[in-house]
Image (cartoon, rainbow, N blue to C red; front, top):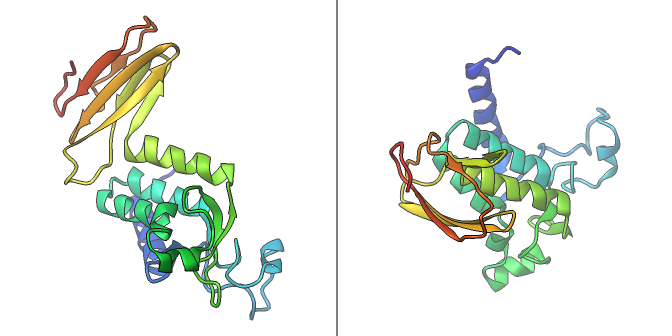
Length: 209
């Protein structure tokens, strides 16, 4: 498969410029909606403008976009956009709650993108979006990876984060892991199911204890 880094970078800049709507606190799937055009993209045109795939935030796609920035190692953008789509950020004040109108502690499948319902969440408790958000945070952001009985970290966390901690359960055994900023993916942890609670520190050099 051919990869063109310059084209990918250009595409991601366009996504950030045209679809990340910081004024509305959402990431739109497309803009403008299909409502005044003769073009027929299929069933999405059946949604009213700004709802779900027709110009709203379709959360699956928003998460995939943030994953792409993490894959590009754009730490600042990754952290900014995780916060942007985090439902908690839509319910911190009474004013935000009045706009969002749905539960701020679960993922919404979509967020409306056109007035008079801009910023309103839709189809909450959506396990598909929740599953992808989990993968974004654990794998792309915190950088936890596993292959068989081995795990390692390749985090994409903000520079001001000195470390983070995670409790990982392997079968019947708990691992309390602290990962320091700059952790190397060469620091691989061999998991054993010995029913003993382990405390592990992953450093920024090629050792762990």
